Length: 319
Length: 319
Image (cartoon, rainbow over all chains, first blue to last red; front, side, top):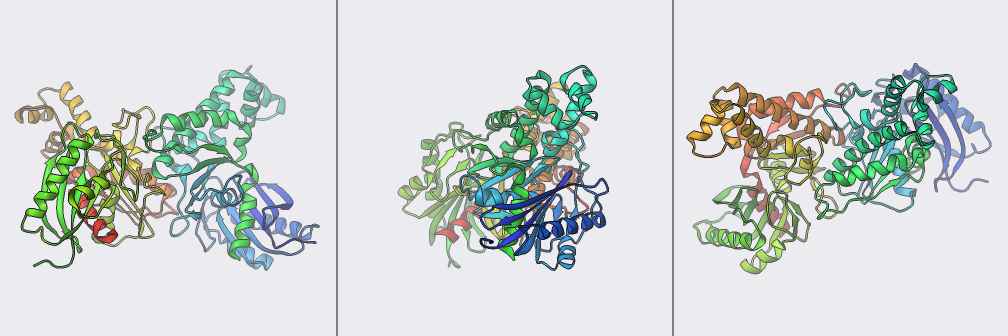
């Protein structure tokens, strides 16, 4: 019944853990999703992941799963698979690869979430690009850099943290503790922060109203909904967000020579609201545009699914 | 009389052209220096370089020169050796490699000036580093990135332009036309701009006085002299300059995983005036310093000589 090998791919983000059974061609045979617990320490997370793996294996697509791949937010030692630290999760010095292998009996690989998502886009995205970057715009900003067809991780897996480039030393505080990281200006967290500020200044505005109708605090999704419904305030927040993203893109384009800049993560669902101002700023701040090509800024093929698919692919390639 | 092969290395910057006869171990057997003409178009530059090569070959160390290497400011196609554009020079679409080979009869290689300087530091600097960056702080900010022991140029030689990362979208205009590039905030040009502003505000201050004694406009060297003599204003300008450099260093450290960040170019002669605030800012803005090592910020071994030495080494390695 199965075609080729299958692996479980897990994508651990700041707000959710996505899991899937992934085939060698990237097909998702089953999927599962949990919210990241508020106390995201390593014991809590071990229990959650063990449960997700067991549920996926027990399901109808679970036969023949031969490995586990994980993409996790934070600084992940490669190939050891130990997570040293994460800006938006409570786990620290977490031997995730060892824990998973012991609790499941399957071989496992653990990499940074941006890296595995970048692998999925490079291998299975619309066009094959040997030199590209994926920026995943979600709670934070993850990145996967592919140079000459290979993931660039740095010698110990600690590189490619493009979300923590500084784009404004006087900017807002980031989840990592610094001020003015790209992530602090252009992520879902930044959208939430800007949306709350806008709602506080205009309690009768659409952003505040949508949040109140939902019975909770303003979140980034209320800004997205309001912007899509034509609210000028919400649209102006996307202009700010996209412009910051585009300035960061221009900076990485000065350093690398990419064929494409691919934008993934939850916020890419906002489409041109995010991508149009990002493209404009990437052009405005492009270094020497008369002598250096400006790579296209494209929406990711897999959007929010790139992490779990790439994690599964990585497991199939590396085990 | 000669030991091993020798090449002529030429380093074309915004204000000067440095030339040398370089041995395989990096020894400089002869050197020569010319100011970059105000009209730095390609015809003028061809004449200048042809003359420098002839003078070096006619000198006592000229026997046995077998190749020419050039490091040039700007975007340089690799391996073609065509200079597409440079922010601080007038040459455009200049087939420098072809011109040199035709006019001298010697094989030639042409690369970005930061790349060749990085090669010199990586091969012959105090400690061998397989993953490092050289930032040359002169008229502009050049960069040479070494990954896994090899120069990272991008697939067509147009990468590694770290000086044109954006560090402040509202910052001053750069020679490249953009606003807020690292180069616009942390180069010799930035020091000159800040020095002129300080002298205009305080015509009796040390910076203005040193420039007037020299009979000319304020230049970066007057700020350096004043800072070294203890002038508080000049020292505060170095704090600003070094801090901007350090923020840029923190950004590249987020992306790469370097063993060392090496600072060269003319301004490194200012020593700790530049390096101390750069180190502090690189630490202040380091991403996840508890989980990722902060590479040391070191003065270059070859300082202003890295370009011509690296250009000579590259010629010996590639021809």
